[in-house]
Figure 1 (spheres, rainbow over the protein chains, first blue to last red):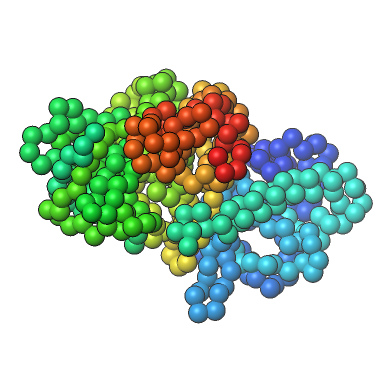
Figure 2 (cartoon, rainbow over the protein chains, first blue to last red; figure 1 turned 30 degrees about the vertical axis):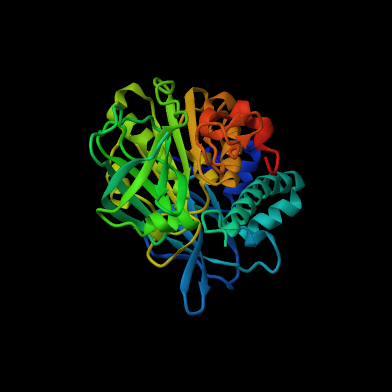
Length: 153
Length: 272
């Protein structure tokens, strides 16, 4: 049987993480499943979790009055979803909705923050990984804002 | 190099601002009507002007030339007004080709942004016609919104093929779009190919190509195995007028396809 520890160690986001840190993370982690169209979280609500996606596809959305839900990004197998748990005031900036059946590992944000406070090396490792993801997403967002395929007028 | 009159046999509206013209020669066909994937023709809207447009059809298909064009200026606007039966002038084909033969035995990654899919479509036709000669084949295609996706029915057919990995993303989506939202470089990050045995062909806006090349190199694809199609203002198409000069090269004759290691120095300089 696949243990949670092994699943975490093999996920691209945590790959190469020291085994002792993986053991610490397991205490804050749980397996979760979302059916297609099920909401993972909603913008403006407390951000107590983040997810590493094992299987499936998730849309990150922003509700625009009069236009409905605007999808600004999608997150897929092997990727990580959510960093609002890291930054005060710990509220989701966007909503997330499963596009397909999605299996993920959910991490309790408060539990992780406490562990990072106790063990700064673990905190550094996690922040290093999150900052890479944040930089990639920021770059993508900037490219999207450029409207490269638009008419340029 | 006189324009050869061609008749529009069919107009297909691909998106709100993009259309495909099927052209057949009027009178006897020119001696050799073939083309290589990556080449372009100069299309002449009589009384308005000429514009360089990549050939986007199947190189194995003879007797008809397909051109997918986006309306961006006066000449493309005039071409967009043509109907079945209209006549226009064609000069070409010009330019070099994508390294389709060189890619045999390799994984192939085609990276397309927006209208950049059109010059890569002949590559895909040719590869899929001789599929056993290649390793894994990936098409990573990004465009603005779901409504801007080109060749919709064809992409759907290709998507069902188990020997082609098709990754499509859009910059933004509203409503029921079930696919990916994000940028093309993000597709490359997780695409299934062996970087040490891959030939990549990239076509799209230059900024998109720059970030795509960066991602391909991060994955480990060597610069000499990355090929880009460059776009410059072309007038004569035979390397005489200098309008399409790109450093020491002319895009119309030495390109439009360039090996990245040979243009790297120019590629990262603004206004070249």
